[in-house]
Length: 214
Image (tube, rainbow, N blue to C red; front, side):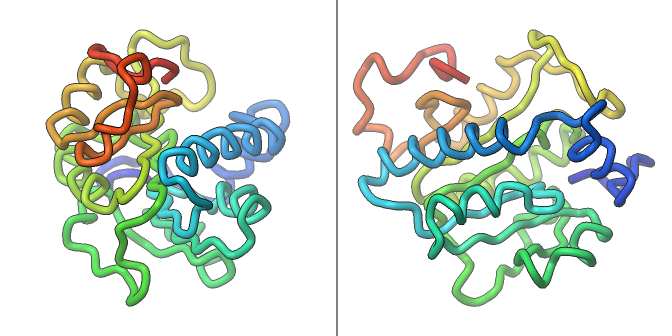
């Protein structure tokens, strides 16, 4: 998901290079499946039941959908992305809809898919967005989170490989502060609970400085 002012194009060539080309891809299908399984398990642990609904913000071609459905075939998946190419090619089959991150607060979700969602995913997106876009869209993610939010972002403290074009080097504390302002409490694996659910966390499951495992 990218801003309209960014010349970077999230087109078919982009997804071929970073998600399917073995020389450049960010992670293999197996690596993604392991990550999805871990996040889904954490969300189900907090919910106390199987996942029923997932909102994937900045979903690209909807790569999380297949591994999620292998785990929970009856799960409802909705993906949002600003890539007109990805939505044109996969929107109907994978339930992807066109949306820019900054426009999320004003987005009208389809009837029956308006949340809150058991799991909200925003993976590998935030570090490519301008600060104003994050400030505009992040409150909507918090509002839609009924169970767990997986907000995976790379920071200036991380060793970053892969797509560096448009990468915004911000300290981890920058993200933690903004998540905390919205009442999102870290619970590991770059996952967060809404404040009203955070009381169920044991003391050693949370950290004053951020996620234990994220």
